[in-house]
Image (spheres, rainbow, N blue to C red):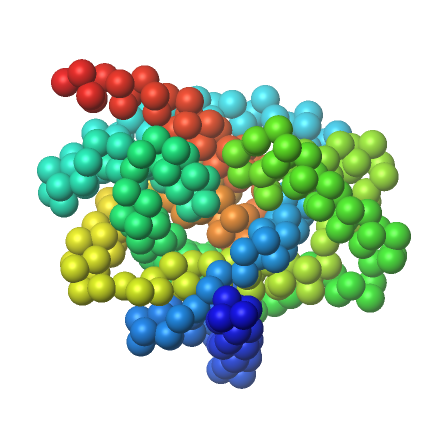
Length: 343
């Protein structure tokens, strides 16, 4: 009963935050509003709860939105993306040789925690794999939540300043303009793709499963529409809650270690990302600098997809980079950790 009360209180507070951002005309009201109010209440000692399975269910909308953009024309353009994808391993090496020592030597994290805390990727995925490997889950949670909070707070400002992106405009057509059958197909693809991905234990199941199934239906011509604006706003709402509520129960000791580590690591990753964004854009390895910016920005996969949808970026390009980055992080973790333990 207490859990349900906490979840209801959290949802109500998040709704007030979204309404306040809408009223004030602030950017990304359905993402930043819930995130800001949940963060504030968590720091004030309120008992908040993430939305659990409901939150994950709404996250599937992002996977559906990505899959719905994949058409035969998009697939034919994939070879052109190979040049910047090849640079991803180099990007991760640069992150590893700078970020890992910061957390290991500077903050005294153990080796496993330092590795999974230093890597840029989806918050949920890194927590799952880090916990399985024996990392400090509280440290991981706060370090990555702080990194995502920092990036998600700063990225929209740069989108608005450099690319004049309207961060308040609807991220798609209204539901009334989309045939009901298409909406039903989009919802079905999200839920079925998610459950199948969970069954085969795919990482990032709530996004990648729906993305793959929707892409198949899109390429075959069955799905012809992207999710309406209302669905995208709903997914933003629950992502905002998930990030803000991570700070529940924060102590002063955690703030000066885990949160500070996350903040400094976020700045370091953003600096490395900026160097690669400039390099790739200079070499013309990308459709546009906006696409590269969102592909190499060290935020979570879901948060970057939200920004890519709003900015009108090439979703396939952005998501492929985030997927490959996560695959590399997970694949090479056992090898790297084994070598570190031997040393």
